[in-house]
Image 1: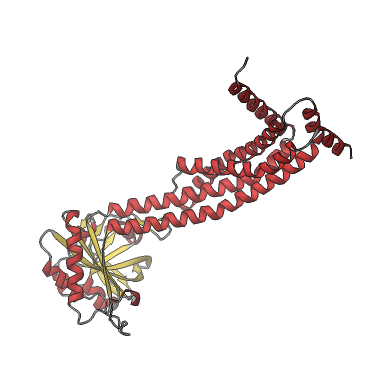
Image 2: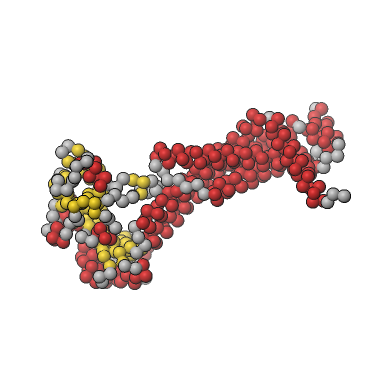
Length: 418
Protein backbone atom coordinates (compact mmCIF):
# COMPACT_ATOMS: atom_id res chain seq x y z
CA UNK A 1 0.00 0.00 0.00
CA UNK A 2 1.41 3.39 -0.96
CA UNK A 3 1.89 5.93 1.75
CA UNK A 4 -0.31 9.10 1.92
CA UNK A 5 2.72 11.34 1.46
CA UNK A 6 3.65 9.68 -1.80
CA UNK A 7 0.05 9.85 -3.03
CA UNK A 8 -0.11 13.57 -2.28
CA UNK A 9 3.22 14.12 -4.00
CA UNK A 10 2.07 12.27 -7.11
CA UNK A 11 -1.17 14.26 -7.17
CA UNK A 12 0.74 17.57 -7.03
CA UNK A 13 3.09 16.35 -9.76
CA UNK A 14 0.13 15.32 -11.92
CA UNK A 15 -1.55 18.70 -11.32
CA UNK A 16 1.64 20.51 -12.29
CA UNK A 17 2.00 18.43 -15.46
CA UNK A 18 -1.58 19.10 -16.47
CA UNK A 19 -1.14 22.81 -15.73
CA UNK A 20 1.88 22.98 -18.04
CA UNK A 21 -0.02 21.15 -20.78
CA UNK A 22 -2.97 23.52 -20.45
CA UNK A 23 -0.72 26.56 -20.79
CA UNK A 24 1.05 25.07 -23.81
CA UNK A 25 -2.28 24.53 -25.59
CA UNK A 26 -2.76 28.32 -25.74
CA UNK A 27 0.74 29.80 -26.03
CA UNK A 28 -0.35 33.22 -27.33
CA UNK A 29 -2.86 33.70 -24.53
CA UNK A 30 -0.31 32.52 -21.96
CA UNK A 31 2.29 34.95 -23.28
CA UNK A 32 -0.13 37.87 -23.27
CA UNK A 33 -1.28 37.01 -19.75
CA UNK A 34 2.30 36.87 -18.46
CA UNK A 35 3.20 40.18 -20.15
CA UNK A 36 1.88 42.20 -17.21
CA UNK A 37 4.13 40.32 -14.80
CA UNK A 38 7.08 40.75 -17.19
CA UNK A 39 6.64 44.53 -17.18
CA UNK A 40 6.18 44.66 -13.42
CA UNK A 41 9.20 42.53 -12.53
CA UNK A 42 11.35 44.36 -15.10
CA UNK A 43 10.47 47.69 -13.50
CA UNK A 44 11.19 46.46 -9.98
CA UNK A 45 14.55 44.91 -10.91
CA UNK A 46 15.68 48.02 -12.81
CA UNK A 47 14.73 50.34 -9.93
CA UNK A 48 16.39 48.17 -7.29
CA UNK A 49 19.55 47.46 -9.26
CA UNK A 50 20.19 51.08 -10.26
CA UNK A 51 19.22 52.41 -6.84
CA UNK A 52 21.44 49.94 -4.99
CA UNK A 53 24.27 50.60 -7.42
CA UNK A 54 24.04 54.33 -6.83
CA UNK A 55 23.96 53.83 -3.07
CA UNK A 56 26.98 51.52 -3.13
CA UNK A 57 28.93 53.91 -5.41
CA UNK A 58 28.08 56.84 -3.14
CA UNK A 59 29.20 54.94 -0.04
CA UNK A 60 32.40 53.75 -1.69
CA UNK A 61 33.31 57.22 -2.95
CA UNK A 62 32.64 58.99 0.33
CA UNK A 63 34.41 56.37 2.44
CA UNK A 64 37.43 56.63 0.14
CA UNK A 65 37.70 60.14 1.53
CA UNK A 66 38.58 58.57 4.89
CA UNK A 67 36.78 57.62 8.07
CA UNK A 68 38.84 60.05 10.16
CA UNK A 69 37.49 63.29 8.65
CA UNK A 70 35.12 65.68 10.42
CA UNK A 71 32.98 68.31 8.69
CA UNK A 72 31.91 71.39 10.64
CA UNK A 73 28.91 73.23 9.19
CA UNK A 74 26.46 75.90 10.29
CA UNK A 75 22.76 76.13 9.60
CA UNK A 76 19.85 78.38 10.44
CA UNK A 77 17.19 76.29 12.13
CA UNK A 78 14.80 77.82 14.64
CA UNK A 79 13.49 74.40 15.63
CA UNK A 80 16.80 73.55 17.30
CA UNK A 81 16.82 76.46 19.73
CA UNK A 82 17.49 75.65 23.34
CA UNK A 83 14.77 76.26 25.95
CA UNK A 84 14.31 79.97 26.61
CA UNK A 85 16.27 81.14 23.56
CA UNK A 86 14.77 83.70 21.22
CA UNK A 87 14.43 82.99 17.48
CA UNK A 88 17.33 83.78 15.20
CA UNK A 89 17.78 87.41 14.25
CA UNK A 90 17.46 88.34 10.60
CA UNK A 91 21.23 88.57 10.34
CA UNK A 92 22.49 84.99 10.10
CA UNK A 93 25.78 84.52 11.91
CA UNK A 94 27.25 81.32 10.49
CA UNK A 95 30.83 80.11 10.27
CA UNK A 96 33.52 82.75 9.84
CA UNK A 97 37.17 82.70 8.96
CA UNK A 98 37.88 83.83 12.52
CA UNK A 99 36.21 80.59 13.72
CA UNK A 100 38.55 78.60 11.51
CA UNK A 101 41.58 80.49 12.78
CA UNK A 102 40.48 79.96 16.38
CA UNK A 103 40.06 76.23 15.83
CA UNK A 104 43.41 76.05 14.04
CA UNK A 105 45.16 77.58 17.04
CA UNK A 106 43.37 75.19 19.40
CA UNK A 107 43.93 71.77 17.76
CA UNK A 108 47.14 69.81 18.19
CA UNK A 109 49.67 68.63 15.62
CA UNK A 110 47.74 65.40 15.01
CA UNK A 111 44.93 67.33 13.30
CA UNK A 112 45.16 68.98 9.88
CA UNK A 113 42.35 71.24 8.75
CA UNK A 114 41.27 73.62 6.04
CA UNK A 115 38.28 75.82 5.34
CA UNK A 116 36.31 74.81 2.28
CA UNK A 117 34.77 77.85 0.64
CA UNK A 118 32.60 76.78 -2.27
CA UNK A 119 32.37 79.51 -4.89
CA UNK A 120 29.84 79.58 -7.68
CA UNK A 121 30.47 77.60 -10.84
CA UNK A 122 32.51 79.59 -13.32
CA UNK A 123 33.79 79.43 -16.87
CA UNK A 124 37.56 79.17 -17.11
CA UNK A 125 39.04 80.59 -20.31
CA UNK A 126 42.42 80.12 -21.94
CA UNK A 127 43.17 81.53 -25.41
CA UNK A 128 39.58 81.28 -26.55
CA UNK A 129 38.99 77.86 -24.99
CA UNK A 130 36.46 77.56 -22.20
CA UNK A 131 35.63 74.95 -19.57
CA UNK A 132 33.09 74.96 -16.77
CA UNK A 133 34.83 74.66 -13.40
CA UNK A 134 33.96 74.64 -9.71
CA UNK A 135 36.09 76.97 -7.58
CA UNK A 136 37.09 76.15 -4.01
CA UNK A 137 38.86 78.41 -1.53
CA UNK A 138 41.10 76.36 0.77
CA UNK A 139 44.19 76.62 2.96
CA UNK A 140 47.66 75.15 2.56
CA UNK A 141 46.75 71.84 4.26
CA UNK A 142 43.90 71.08 1.87
CA UNK A 143 45.84 68.34 -0.01
CA UNK A 144 46.43 66.47 3.27
CA UNK A 145 42.86 66.97 4.42
CA UNK A 146 41.23 65.95 1.14
CA UNK A 147 43.93 63.43 0.18
CA UNK A 148 44.70 65.17 -3.10
CA UNK A 149 47.76 63.93 -4.93
CA UNK A 150 49.91 66.58 -6.66
CA UNK A 151 50.57 65.45 -10.24
CA UNK A 152 52.80 68.36 -11.27
CA UNK A 153 53.90 71.68 -9.87
CA UNK A 154 53.12 72.42 -6.24
CA UNK A 155 50.30 73.55 -4.00
CA UNK A 156 50.24 77.17 -2.88
CA UNK A 157 51.91 78.21 0.39
CA UNK A 158 51.18 80.38 3.41
CA UNK A 159 52.51 83.52 1.68
CA UNK A 160 49.94 83.09 -1.10
CA UNK A 161 47.21 82.84 1.53
CA UNK A 162 48.49 85.88 3.44
CA UNK A 163 48.67 88.07 0.29
CA UNK A 164 45.58 86.64 -1.43
CA UNK A 165 47.77 85.73 -4.38
CA UNK A 166 46.41 85.24 -7.86
CA UNK A 167 47.40 81.58 -7.99
CA UNK A 168 45.41 78.40 -8.41
CA UNK A 169 45.72 74.62 -8.60
CA UNK A 170 43.56 72.72 -11.07
CA UNK A 171 42.40 69.12 -11.53
CA UNK A 172 43.95 67.02 -14.30
CA UNK A 173 40.71 66.98 -16.28
CA UNK A 174 40.63 70.80 -16.29
CA UNK A 175 44.23 70.86 -17.54
CA UNK A 176 43.34 68.44 -20.34
CA UNK A 177 40.36 70.53 -21.42
CA UNK A 178 42.09 73.87 -21.42
CA UNK A 179 45.64 72.99 -22.41
CA UNK A 180 45.33 69.65 -24.20
CA UNK A 181 48.57 67.70 -24.01
CA UNK A 182 50.58 70.74 -22.85
CA UNK A 183 51.48 71.43 -19.25
CA UNK A 184 49.43 74.08 -17.47
CA UNK A 185 52.16 74.99 -14.97
CA UNK A 186 53.06 78.68 -15.14
CA UNK A 187 50.25 79.55 -17.53
CA UNK A 188 47.30 81.85 -16.89
CA UNK A 189 43.61 81.09 -16.84
CA UNK A 190 40.79 83.60 -16.49
CA UNK A 191 38.08 83.07 -13.90
CA UNK A 192 35.24 85.60 -14.04
CA UNK A 193 37.53 87.85 -16.06
CA UNK A 194 40.37 87.75 -13.49
CA UNK A 195 43.70 86.12 -14.38
CA UNK A 196 45.21 83.43 -12.15
CA UNK A 197 48.48 81.60 -12.72
CA UNK A 198 48.38 77.81 -12.49
CA UNK A 199 51.08 76.61 -10.09
CA UNK A 200 49.96 72.99 -9.64
CA UNK A 201 47.84 70.14 -10.98
CA UNK A 202 46.15 67.54 -8.76
CA UNK A 203 44.92 64.09 -9.73
CA UNK A 204 41.25 63.73 -10.52
CA UNK A 205 39.02 62.57 -7.71
CA UNK A 206 35.91 60.50 -8.33
CA UNK A 207 32.84 62.64 -7.73
CA UNK A 208 29.15 61.82 -7.66
CA UNK A 209 26.17 63.99 -8.34
CA UNK A 210 22.96 63.89 -6.27
CA UNK A 211 21.70 60.77 -8.06
CA UNK A 212 24.92 58.85 -7.54
CA UNK A 213 26.08 59.20 -11.14
CA UNK A 214 29.78 59.72 -11.79
CA UNK A 215 30.64 63.30 -12.68
CA UNK A 216 33.84 64.83 -14.01
CA UNK A 217 36.23 66.47 -11.56
CA UNK A 218 36.34 70.15 -12.59
CA UNK A 219 37.86 71.50 -9.37
CA UNK A 220 39.96 74.65 -9.18
CA UNK A 221 41.62 75.42 -5.84
CA UNK A 222 42.89 78.82 -4.72
CA UNK A 223 43.71 80.46 -1.38
CA UNK A 224 40.51 81.11 0.53
CA UNK A 225 41.61 84.72 0.91
CA UNK A 226 41.83 85.06 -2.87
CA UNK A 227 38.35 83.65 -3.36
CA UNK A 228 36.87 86.02 -0.79
CA UNK A 229 38.70 89.11 -1.98
CA UNK A 230 38.70 88.64 -5.74
CA UNK A 231 35.74 86.48 -6.69
CA UNK A 232 33.10 85.87 -4.05
CA UNK A 233 32.72 87.63 -0.72
CA UNK A 234 29.94 85.31 0.55
CA UNK A 235 30.81 81.74 -0.45
CA UNK A 236 29.30 78.61 1.04
CA UNK A 237 31.57 77.73 3.92
CA UNK A 238 32.49 74.64 5.92
CA UNK A 239 35.57 73.41 7.78
CA UNK A 240 37.22 70.05 7.16
CA UNK A 241 39.44 68.40 9.78
CA UNK A 242 41.40 65.17 9.50
CA UNK A 243 42.62 63.37 12.60
CA UNK A 244 45.34 60.78 12.87
CA UNK A 245 42.91 58.28 14.40
CA UNK A 246 39.14 57.95 14.25
CA UNK A 247 39.20 57.38 18.02
CA UNK A 248 39.83 61.11 18.42
CA UNK A 249 36.72 62.12 16.49
CA UNK A 250 34.16 62.28 19.36
CA UNK A 251 36.31 64.60 21.49
CA UNK A 252 37.29 66.69 18.46
CA UNK A 253 33.64 67.18 17.45
CA UNK A 254 32.72 68.36 20.94
CA UNK A 255 35.65 70.73 21.26
CA UNK A 256 35.25 72.49 17.90
CA UNK A 257 31.51 73.00 18.40
CA UNK A 258 32.21 74.46 21.85
CA UNK A 259 34.76 76.84 20.32
CA UNK A 260 32.44 78.28 17.68
CA UNK A 261 29.47 78.50 20.03
CA UNK A 262 31.60 80.05 22.78
CA UNK A 263 32.74 82.84 20.49
CA UNK A 264 29.18 84.18 20.20
CA UNK A 265 27.28 86.11 22.82
CA UNK A 266 24.12 84.22 22.04
CA UNK A 267 23.63 81.28 19.78
CA UNK A 268 22.16 82.41 16.48
CA UNK A 269 23.24 79.45 14.37
CA UNK A 270 23.24 75.71 14.71
CA UNK A 271 26.75 74.25 14.41
CA UNK A 272 27.02 70.63 13.46
CA UNK A 273 30.18 68.51 13.45
CA UNK A 274 29.85 65.14 11.76
CA UNK A 275 32.30 62.54 10.62
CA UNK A 276 32.34 61.40 7.01
CA UNK A 277 31.11 58.02 8.23
CA UNK A 278 28.02 59.65 9.75
CA UNK A 279 27.35 61.59 6.56
CA UNK A 280 27.75 58.41 4.52
CA UNK A 281 25.20 56.67 6.74
CA UNK A 282 22.67 59.48 6.35
CA UNK A 283 23.12 59.73 2.59
CA UNK A 284 23.02 56.00 1.94
CA UNK A 285 19.97 55.50 4.15
CA UNK A 286 18.22 58.25 2.23
CA UNK A 287 19.23 56.64 -1.06
CA UNK A 288 17.99 53.24 0.15
CA UNK A 289 14.65 54.72 1.21
CA UNK A 290 14.23 56.39 -2.16
CA UNK A 291 15.13 53.15 -3.96
CA UNK A 292 12.53 51.19 -2.00
CA UNK A 293 9.93 53.88 -2.66
CA UNK A 294 10.57 53.77 -6.41
CA UNK A 295 10.53 49.96 -6.37
CA UNK A 296 7.22 50.02 -4.48
CA UNK A 297 5.74 52.29 -7.12
CA UNK A 298 7.04 49.96 -9.82
CA UNK A 299 5.50 47.00 -7.97
CA UNK A 300 2.04 48.47 -8.64
CA UNK A 301 2.39 47.14 -12.18
CA UNK A 302 2.77 43.67 -10.66
CA UNK A 303 -0.65 44.05 -9.08
CA UNK A 304 -2.04 45.13 -12.45
CA UNK A 305 -0.42 42.06 -14.00
CA UNK A 306 -2.04 39.91 -11.29
CA UNK A 307 -5.45 41.32 -12.18
CA UNK A 308 -4.80 40.33 -15.78
CA UNK A 309 -4.00 36.79 -14.69
CA UNK A 310 -7.18 36.62 -12.61
CA UNK A 311 -9.34 37.78 -15.50
CA UNK A 312 -7.80 35.34 -17.98
CA UNK A 313 -8.03 32.46 -15.52
CA UNK A 314 -11.73 33.27 -15.04
CA UNK A 315 -12.24 33.06 -18.80
CA UNK A 316 -10.26 29.80 -18.89
CA UNK A 317 -12.48 28.25 -16.22
CA UNK A 318 -15.56 29.22 -18.24
CA UNK A 319 -14.13 27.71 -21.44
CA UNK A 320 -13.09 24.44 -19.74
CA UNK A 321 -16.27 23.66 -17.82
CA UNK A 322 -16.87 20.52 -19.93
CA UNK A 323 -13.36 19.29 -19.13
CA UNK A 324 -13.90 20.04 -15.44
CA UNK A 325 -17.26 18.24 -15.42
CA UNK A 326 -15.87 15.13 -17.14
CA UNK A 327 -12.89 14.91 -14.79
CA UNK A 328 -15.11 15.27 -11.75
CA UNK A 329 -17.44 12.61 -13.12
CA UNK A 330 -14.47 10.27 -13.59
CA UNK A 331 -13.44 10.65 -9.95
CA UNK A 332 -11.01 13.57 -9.91
CA UNK A 333 -11.13 15.31 -6.54
CA UNK A 334 -12.22 18.98 -6.39
CA UNK A 335 -8.95 19.69 -4.55
CA UNK A 336 -6.97 18.44 -7.56
CA UNK A 337 -8.98 20.71 -9.88
CA UNK A 338 -8.25 23.65 -7.61
CA UNK A 339 -4.54 22.76 -7.45
CA UNK A 340 -4.25 22.59 -11.22
CA UNK A 341 -5.77 26.02 -11.86
CA UNK A 342 -3.83 27.54 -8.99
CA UNK A 343 -0.59 26.11 -10.36
CA UNK A 344 -1.42 27.49 -13.81
CA UNK A 345 -1.70 31.00 -12.36
CA UNK A 346 1.53 30.59 -10.38
CA UNK A 347 3.40 29.24 -13.41
CA UNK A 348 2.21 32.17 -15.53
CA UNK A 349 3.47 34.60 -12.88
CA UNK A 350 6.75 32.69 -12.45
CA UNK A 351 7.50 32.57 -16.18
CA UNK A 352 6.69 36.28 -16.43
CA UNK A 353 8.93 36.92 -13.44
CA UNK A 354 11.90 35.05 -14.91
CA UNK A 355 11.58 36.89 -18.21
CA UNK A 356 11.17 40.17 -16.30
CA UNK A 357 14.35 39.55 -14.30
CA UNK A 358 16.30 38.90 -17.49
CA UNK A 359 14.90 42.03 -19.14
CA UNK A 360 15.52 44.07 -15.97
CA UNK A 361 19.18 43.07 -15.91
CA UNK A 362 19.53 43.89 -19.61
CA UNK A 363 17.82 47.28 -19.19
CA UNK A 364 20.02 48.09 -16.21
CA UNK A 365 23.15 47.22 -18.17
CA UNK A 366 21.93 49.37 -21.06
CA UNK A 367 21.30 52.31 -18.71
CA UNK A 368 24.78 51.87 -17.26
CA UNK A 369 26.30 51.85 -20.74
CA UNK A 370 24.36 54.86 -22.07
CA UNK A 371 24.23 57.13 -19.01
CA UNK A 372 27.04 55.86 -16.75
CA UNK A 373 24.45 54.96 -14.10
CA UNK A 374 25.90 52.59 -11.54
CA UNK A 375 24.16 49.24 -11.23
CA UNK A 376 24.22 46.45 -8.68
CA UNK A 377 22.02 43.39 -9.12
CA UNK A 378 21.62 41.53 -5.85
CA UNK A 379 20.41 37.97 -5.47
CA UNK A 380 18.03 39.20 -2.79
CA UNK A 381 16.37 41.65 -5.20
CA UNK A 382 15.93 38.94 -7.83
CA UNK A 383 14.59 36.40 -5.33
CA UNK A 384 12.25 38.99 -3.83
CA UNK A 385 10.87 39.99 -7.24
CA UNK A 386 10.26 36.36 -8.21
CA UNK A 387 8.64 35.44 -4.89
CA UNK A 388 6.42 38.51 -5.00
CA UNK A 389 5.35 37.74 -8.56
CA UNK A 390 4.51 34.15 -7.54
CA UNK A 391 2.53 35.45 -4.56
CA UNK A 392 0.59 37.79 -6.83
CA UNK A 393 -0.05 34.89 -9.20
CA UNK A 394 -1.29 32.67 -6.37
CA UNK A 395 -3.65 35.36 -5.09
CA UNK A 396 -4.86 36.10 -8.61
CA UNK A 397 -5.55 32.43 -9.36
CA UNK A 398 -7.15 31.57 -6.03
CA UNK A 399 -10.68 32.76 -6.82
CA UNK A 400 -10.89 31.16 -10.30
CA UNK A 401 -9.41 27.92 -8.89
CA UNK A 402 -11.97 27.81 -6.07
CA UNK A 403 -14.74 28.47 -8.57
CA UNK A 404 -13.58 25.59 -10.77
CA UNK A 405 -13.30 23.20 -7.82
CA UNK A 406 -16.81 24.14 -6.65
CA UNK A 407 -18.50 22.77 -9.76
CA UNK A 408 -20.47 19.53 -9.65
CA UNK A 409 -20.32 17.23 -12.67
CA UNK A 410 -24.01 17.84 -13.49
CA UNK A 411 -23.70 21.63 -13.11
CA UNK A 412 -20.49 21.81 -15.17
CA UNK A 413 -21.91 19.76 -18.05
CA UNK A 414 -25.20 21.64 -17.95
CA UNK A 415 -23.34 24.98 -18.00
CA UNK A 416 -21.32 23.83 -21.02
CA UNK A 417 -24.49 22.84 -22.84
CA UNK A 418 -26.08 26.30 -22.40
